[in-house]
Length: 295
Image 1: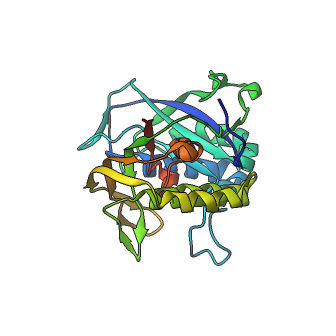
Image 2 (image 1 turned 90 degrees about the horizontal axis):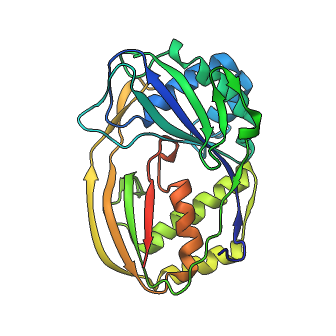
C-alpha cells in the first residue's frame, strides 16, 4: 500500500560481484577501498563519467563535500580484517541517484578494468564476475556481455502502514552525525528525521526529483512528540586511509539499535526511505545503513 507521494526520487541499485585472483587480506570495512579502486579505473575509462560521479560532490572552490550522486554499500564489517580466499566472491552494491544512471555504461566499463588496480594497500587483484540490477535481478553485465535492459531505475517508494505505534531502528553500519564539530553519541527521533529529510531534499535538488517542503516541515514538527524508549548504542572505532591526504582518517560511528514510541504512522515513508538512502555523514562509503522494524 502506498501513500500520497511526499517525494519523488529515482535510483539505480547495481549488485556487483568480484572474484579474488589470490588470497587477500583487506580492511575490516571496505567502503573506502572499493570507492578508491572504482574511482581509479573510472578516471582512466571516462573522464566525463568520473567528473560527474566523483567530482560533482564538490563545491566550486573544491573545498567542501556537498553530495555525491552515488553510494557504495560494501559487505558487512569483518573484524579484525576481511580475509578473502582465492576464488571466493566479494559482493557489494553501488547505487546511482537520479541523473547519475546516465553514466552506468562507463561505470560498467571501469568495473571490467578493475583488476588492473587491485584492492587494499597491497593491491590484491580481483576481477569482475557479474553486475545485476539489485531490484529487478536482471543482468547488467556477464561474461563480457552488457545488457542494457538491466539499466532501469527504481522509484523510491512512499510506503504507508497503518496504526504504527513504535519503531526499532537497527544501525547496520556505523552512523556518523556531527553536532558542533563533534560526533554525537545519542540520536533523538527529531535528529533522525532531520537527517533523512535533509538527505532526500539534497539529492532531489541536485540530481533530479522533488520533495514536498510543506510535508517536510510538518514531519519535523511532529517528530518532537515521539518518545525515546530504549537506546543501546556504542561507538565503533574505525579508520580509513585517504590517498588524497596521504593519512589515516577517523571513520568511527554509532552501532546498535534505538527504539521509539508514539504515532509513527506519518513517518513510515521517510523511515523506509532511510533504509535505501542511509543517513548521516560518509554515506558515499555505505555508512549510516539502517533497518527499521515497525511496531
